[in-house]
Structure formats: structure tokens, C-alpha cells
Image 1 (cartoon, rainbow over the protein chains, first blue to last red):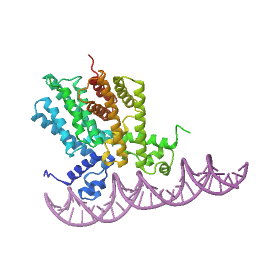
Image 2 (image 1 turned 90 degrees about the horizontal axis):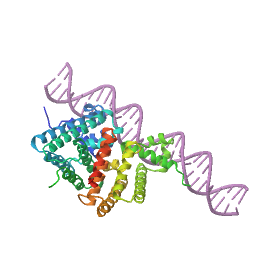
Image 3 (image 1 turned 90 degrees about the vertical axis):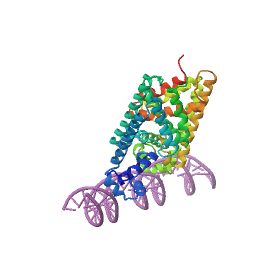
Length: 194
Length: 194
DNA sequence: TCTTGCCTACCTTCTGGTAGGTAGCTTGTC
DNA sequence: GACAAGCTACCTACCAGAAGGTAGGCAAGA
């Protein structure tokens, strides 16, 4: 039943890789067909229109992130560790090139030309991430392990922006190491050594 | 002689607006032709290929930025004021929607699918911006007006990433105010109140 | 037998790009 | 000053291929 590699999943995986490389207009059904080893028309069988495909993809991405964060909440109790794990996750993805950019961050840059249904999913990701980070930061502040300069909400937005900006720079310089150069001090800022 | 609105300039201005909305594959010669009031073929007269148009556009953008920063260096002597002006410039652009995203930041996200000649111009912008910020931060540190937590180079990359990340978030939330929420604390971090 | 998943074949529109022509300047030369 | 030559900026009319998408058929499994 829950096969790990259905054709629909192959299509979604392939589309994700292509979107991460160049955004919504950076790939076509023909590109996917060539990689997955299927005909263009067969993709329409699974996803009638391109917007359906990308909406599904972003929705699934968002669910994966939510599951990942829920898992993190279980495994790592302390707020500092959670932030460190969140930053570390992306540092690993960018270093090993497995996911060198956040799907939603890339799509967010193109919001003006995105189909509305896709844009909504992208916005939902930002709200979700923002609220998770806010609650982690609030808990860290209350238990004294994190030092916030502003509100938890503002600090959450700063962290998100730093991560996305670091992705842009890593790509611009073609150097994964720049991601850590930017994000490590952001953690130290919240959790300064005495 | 130096007319302020030649057709070539109209084309470049229009293309810049369209790129800022959706990146390299987010616009076509037909889009530009419709706005400028010219035929598609006439655009090819000025810019033989799309890559030529975008390379020229990015080169010109980079020169404008360089001129702007040189002007800033003259007008504003103190490093804190320079950083404030740099952040304030973008805050104004995003708030009044005149230039709601940095051309090079947007193109940088799509580097894997960019023509090499365009990618090179984009990288050059990042290097230029990074070196300007580094020198401003170094001077601020030496004269005691700025407090750096890391090297000037690292702090420069942090600032760049914050600005670009803040653009992404402002677009994602559809809220220009978020740009200031993110960038103001980044300045306070370098120039803390006593 | 009905559904699922894929196919071939086709359509329309858009894409970047080319060929060739023309009207209106600027030239240089006599 | 006359006039051909050449250049600039634009045009119409194409083109090949890629874009997203549709219609209808066929084979295999529930």
C-alpha cells in the first residue's frame, strides 16, 4: 500500500529537485518526463496541471517539515539544541548538496508570478516555521537558556531571514561554507558564552 | 546626446521590473515588447539574445549600485550612518514598491539555470557588496563606533544575508514592514546603545 | 467489468530567434 | 550644395522547437 517509490512520488521528487534549481518556470513537464522515464501525458494523469503538481509538492514539503520539527521537539528537549539542530539540518543539506535550497524560500522570491494556490501554500510554510521558532525562543527565554534582544516573534523572523539569506549567499558564491559563517553567529547571539 | 530615455534604456528598465517579479524565466521578449510598445524583433536589434539583455542589465545594475555606494561614501562619513543608509535605502524601496527585491539576489537563487555570463555578473555583485561592507565595518571597528563579534568579512556576510532574507520574508508575508523588523536589530547589534 | 496507469497522437500558444525590407538620418566626396 | 553610401532603428513575416494540455486507446490487476 504505502510503496516507497510510486510514480507520483518519483514525479514529485524530481520536480522538487528541478524547482530547487531554478524555481517555478525553471522546469517543464518534458524535463520531468525525461528523468522519470515516462511520457509527458502520463504526468498529467497524476497531476492535471502544473499548478496542481507544485501545490501538492509544496504541501507535502510543508508536512515533511512539520513532521521533522515535531520529531525534533521530541528528541531534543532544550531550546538551544533545537535551534542548533534546525541550523545544522540546513548546513548539512547545503554542504552535501542533497537539498541546496529551501523549496519555499525559492518559490517565495517568485510569488508575484506564482499561481495563487501555490503562493498560499508557500505563505503557510512561512507562518508555520515562524510560529514554531517563536515558541522555541519563548521557552528558551522563560527557562533562561536563551537571551532575546527583541520579542520572540521578531527574533524568529531574524533567524528565518538569516537562514534564507545564507542560502542565497552560499549559492551566489558557490560555497556551502558561507552558510555556517552566517548562521553560527546567529546562534551565538541568542546563546552567548559567559 | 545623452538622452534619458532611449529605447534600449526603456527595454532594460522594463526587463528589470519583470525580472524582479519572477526571475530569468519569468518574462519573455513578448512581455517587454508589449510594455515598451515595440515589436519583438526590434528588441533583438538592441540585444541579440536574452542572455545579452540580462547580462547588460545586471552589469548596469551593478554599476548603479557602485555609484550609489561611492556617493554614500562621500556624503556620509561615519560607518554607522553608512550602514543605516544602506539598510534605509532598501527599506524605502520595499516599502514604496519601487524596487521590491534586489535584482542580483533574485537571480542568485536561480544560478544553476542561469547562462554562465549572467551568473558571473551576479557573483561580481556579491563580491563588490561584500568588500564595500567589509571596509565600512573595518573602519567602524578601528574608530570604535562599531562593535564586531567576528571578522569584518563575516559580519559583512551576515548583513548581506539579513537584507536578502528580509526581502524574501517581506515578499512571502506580503508585508514590507517585516523588512525593518529584521534589519533594525542587525544594526543595533553592531551599534548597541550604552 | 471497472479502475488504474500508461501510452500515442495531436493541439494551441508561446518561446527565443532569423531574414529581409524600409524610412530616415549622417557621412564623405565631388 | 548634390548625391550616393552606409548606418540606425524599426518593421513584417517567418521558423523550429518547447510549453502546457487534451482525446482516446490499451493492457493489467482488483
